[in-house]
Amino acid sequence: MTVPAVLRVSNISKSYHLGGTLGSVLGVTRQNSLTALDCVSLDLRPGEILALVGESGSGKSTLAKILVGSVSASSGELDYRGAALPTKRGKDATRRIQMVFQDPYSSLNPRLTVGAILAELLWLHRIVPRKSLREESIRLLNLVGMQEDALDAYPSQFSGGQRQRIAIARALAVRPDVLIADEPVSALDVSVQATILDLFATLRLELGLSILFVAHNLAVVQHLSQRVAVMYLGRVVEVAETEELFANPRHPYTRALIDSIPRMSAASVNRELVLEGEPPSPFDVPSGCRFHPRCPVAVAACREVDPSLKSVALEHESACLRAFELAEFAPAH
Ligand SMILES: Nc1ncnc2c1ncn2[C@@H]1O[C@H](COP(=O)(O)OP(=O)(O)OP(=O)(O)O)[C@@H](O)[C@H]1O
Ligand code: SF4
Ligand SMILES: [Mg+2]
Image 1 (tube, rainbow, N blue to C red):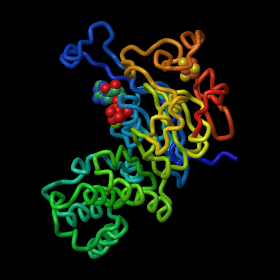
Image 2: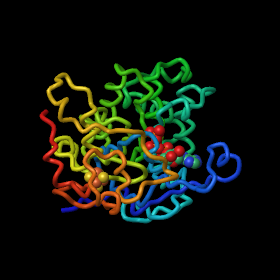
Image 3: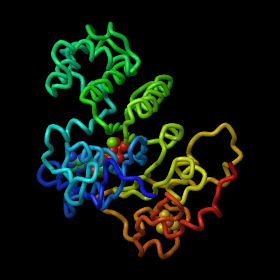
Image 4: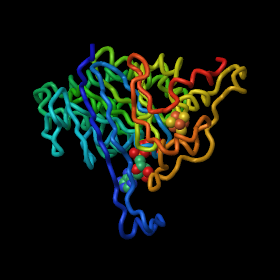
């Protein structure tokens, strides 16, 4: 049975038109628009962490911004719990879908104490009565593993990991049921990353949050997410449950991302699918399968046919013409 989505993205596209100065700075002469997202469809299910993974420029942040309403789509639809989300969102819709950024400074006013940052939001959205603002702020800090004494300090007095916890508390203040986290650990030390990933896992379980977790790297989300969507040049090219995706990838791009994760054993080295070249420019998307210039298993048809996302197994979709042959190239690990 299909689980109803909390957020449903249907055929969302986003183009940016680069005229004037920016176009000439980037050397854009003939083609002056780029397609950051091309007909993306995706569901975020209740209480899941869905990872959105792909190289730089694949469109992850553009999709994240469309989901929180800070960027509008060029076409397509976005539903929240079965109802269309209008371009101009009301206060309630804005409150329910909150964003956590890579750089917590961008969402924390450096001139306010942590207590003032939280109280301001709680009051603005009338989450609790005025007399309960301090108590609620302490509850939020405790939720993210911090203590009451943080209330009187400024964001600059904390480490990167603590600042990200405060930014998460701020996002939680308005009691959202969806968090869109855009690379929330990428700027943190490796030793701190694991503690923040644990926090997301705990918040999902304790608060029943649905979380879209954007990451560059599949390794980061392997033990965190329930499902993974892989993006390539503005398209979702594979979606599956995390365990299934790692055990049985059905797109060569996903396979290459998995093979590039450093391992203790070098046993699989000779059978890796290795990606060559840089991602192509979104100004000039290759014909046929957009991945074909870099695909180690491309065949002639891949230059002609643009594969759409199709079911290849239960809860598993891939946009590859050779999805069913990939097992032949399976790595040894
Ligand atoms: N405001 C904008 N104006 C013009 N082009 C943009 C704008 N925002 C994003 N783009 C372009 O859209 C494409 C997708 O960008 P996006 O930031 O969504 O990628 P990303 O997957 O988040 O990359 P990264 O991993 O580097 O954060 C890129 O080619 C980018 O240059
Ligand atoms: S359709 Fe062809 S080029 Fe595209 S990923 Fe599959 S094998 Fe590679
Ligand atoms: Mg990004």
